[in-house]
Figure (cartoon, rainbow, N blue to C red):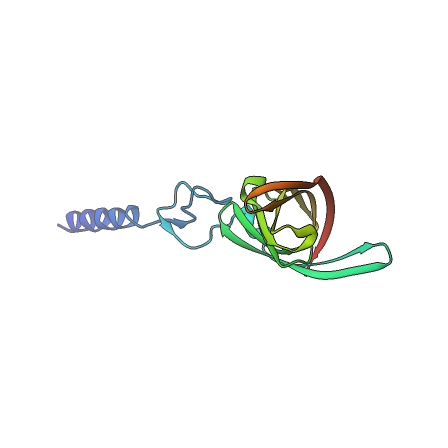
Length: 171
C-alpha cells in the first residue's frame, strides 16, 4: 500500500513539474528569443533598443559651430524615429538592420515645408542614407534631394543631391 501511495505521489509530482511553464522571451523578432519558453517574462531585447536615447552633436560649418541634440525612439522591433536631425526639428524614420546599422529609406522620409524662398510654396526634401552605431557614436551618412513645388507642380530641382555626414555622441 505504501508503495502504491509513493508511486501515485511520484507521478503527481512528475506531471506537475512537466506542466510548469518555462519563462523566457517568446517574441520571435527578439535577439534573445527562446523557442523553449512558453511564458513571456518581458526580457526580450531588440537591436532597435541599442539606438534609443538622446544624442548630442557639434557640427562646424565655416566659422560657426552648431551644437544640438537628436532624440531616437523605438517605434517597432526594427524601426526607430530620429527627431531633430540637422537641428531643424524634423523627424525621419529608419529601419534597424542589426545592432549597429540602420538604413533610411527615401520613401519613408518625404519632408514637406512651406516656404517663400524663390516664390515657391512647398519644398520637398527626400532623405535617404544609412547610419552606423559604434561605441555610443552614431554616424549618419545622408543624401538629401530638394525639389520646389508651386501648386503641386514641380517648378525647380534646387539640388539633385546634398550629402551630409553627422556624428552624434550618445548622452
